[in-house]
Amino acid sequence: MLPTMASYEVLVVEDEEDIAIPLVRTLEREGYAVASVSSGEEAIARVAGEMPAVVILDLGLPDMDGLDVCRQLRGGGYEGGIIMVTARGGELDRVVGLDVGADDYLSKPFGLAELLARVRALLRRNARTDETSVTTASGLKIDVPSRRVTLEGVEIALTAKEFDVLALLAAHRDHVVSRDTLMNQVWDENWFGSTKTLDVTIGRLRGKLEAAGAMERVVAIRGVGFRLETGG
Ligand code: CA
Image (tube, rainbow, N blue to C red; front, side, top):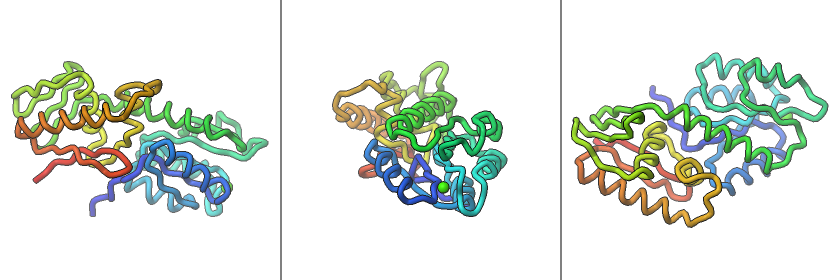
């Protein structure tokens, strides 16, 4: 059976509802697609199948030690971002957290603005590592070093922003990339303009892919973002 593809970017692993609920709400308000679970076992099962971009992992879980959860996620090949959250007083040393494969570490109580900044930083870092060339099964080649897109050897001329949007969607193909992530990574985090710019860019990109006869389609997921799919 194929794994279910994540329809969200951030997985919150937290058993305390008083913390989990406002956290999820804040992330959603920022435009992220979020899922949440309350145990280590659920976290491991979902991350393995769904590969979210970032996991926010509480260390004090009812069924497992968060450190073991982190170790198992990395052991299972998870390469996304992991932010560990620990109670005040430090259940562990920061070094231990980083040692088991976490990328970042926050102590409770933490400000939501601080958490959002860490999530953004991890998503940006992931996008950079994701900047690899992609060739889809239907022959669409997105070459990052030369910034050229070809379909069976024929170039599809894209603007710089159209290329960046396509490269980001292709790096996460079949997964949803939120509007916020696209805006932050293709424009920049200080972009305060209208997100209409994104829709216009997506519209042009769709038109060019279609005109070239590509089987890839940029599908809008209402209220969340966009996903690159290969049609049949
Ligand atoms: Ca807890």
